[in-house]
Image 1 (cartoon, rainbow, N blue to C red):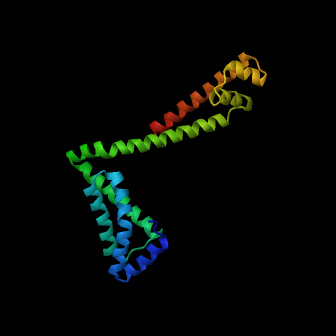
Image 2 (spheres, helix red, strand yellow):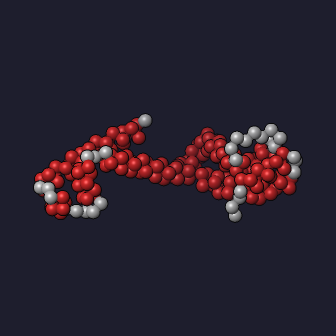
Length: 189
């Protein structure tokens, strides 16, 4: 069910007026998406439940003094995010917690980081290809995307095969240098 920010904003106004029915309505609408959000990060139902309960308890306790600069839904998700970080920090304080975090949370974090790294590297490659001289880019893309052989490219562009080889080698060298530099920056900064 799609929950509109205006509906949640109306509930916040009523909650500030000490309306327990409005609080219950907010809880029923937002508990599940907040729980799923926390569960994905903590990989533990009890911990995710505790995090969401803590956020709702804080909302009710601080209902008169809440100052929200974003949407209330955004505020709730941000509050859960910080509770998740606090819970992870608590888990890391104990020896058994470190093992639990490394077995449940870190693999998912690793997947996210790998996806981000792959996207970043692809963006770098795309940018470097765009910056190749026109004819070199055309030759490189014909080889890479169309799987054209050197002789096919030479025939289509009316160039010598040696020129095509030279252009491909130069393009590959430029990309190799750029990727090496990018990887150095990504992994060592």
